[in-house]
Image 1: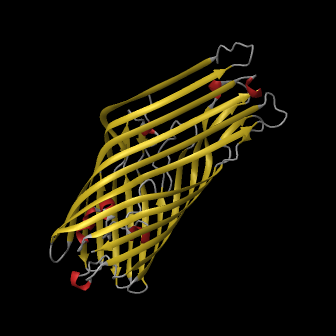
Image 2: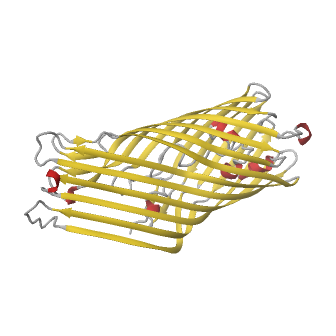
Image 3: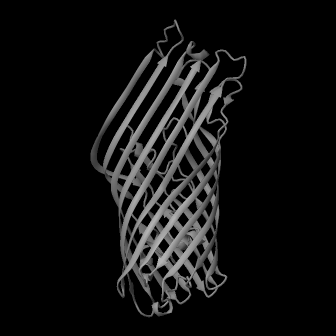
Length: 447
């Protein structure tokens, strides 16, 4: 039995911002994710644990409340193989509200800081309904309906320690350990009628639920070789699941035209149901290496990052994810002591090197996007730590980010024959474009 993790908890449905980035802090919201060398907020637990060492006060951040809107165009997602082919409209609009991060950092002693956080990453939501009818005058008349409703969450409960080393050349080092809880539910179905079922009928449905428990390790450094330059490097191991709870149910039936016997595609009805749990050792998300260089000035800062995710193979789960490289660039500009504006650009390439085997709506999409951010703070906000005595009192910061991404690639659609032949129902790649708009919100309180 193919496991749901192989299709859903892998990055097969890769939407912008969901394969790698998490809106986890003020700096991420402001610049769009170019933060490896510069991160100084609770987002350090996700992007580079070394940044925790920059905390001088206990801080609480509610970061990553995201309003996400998608306009997807993939005409022919459901196709009848007539001449000419009949194609479904393939147009959908999705809207989700996603809480992504909550972090807390404290000072244990001068050179040792602790951070804890809750992150909701690799989020995917998909709701699709498609229908198509053969052209007028076609015999037999073919009607087909298909749908998919899926929901995936990766919850990370993260804790990390970081400290500072060196006097003339500051070096920050940190590490984090994440407990991971992954949940997934997918409902898939399709039905094909030939002359209302008299000339044949095929239907299939599947419901899968899985909950997995695992962990991930992270480590990183930030180095200041010269006063205005920062270099950051972080490594995250692949996410491993060691226990899974599973429930699934399937149904399938096919019926040849009334009064006929089809030896190749006979009358057939079947279903399966199972539930239980098991232990094992499964890699479900690739690890990554992030490298960034930043330049700081009194005007603000600018940073460029390279993110490398390496290949992950998992035979039992059917994963074979190719390695790939993404890029991030971001900058922040000081308008006043209390206000900053941010700009950023990014790529978000699909991780899969082959389309998975779902009946409908598995994507292989590459994205390019931009981010515009605004930050207001009652105290000066800058990656260079401010002395505590200069920041007395309660500090409050709020950031808003606007994120747009354009994606192009393939979606795995369904092609059905013009006459009854269940063995000829196949998956086919369909050209797809996606426009995605995200509104990100973040807030931070320093005590």
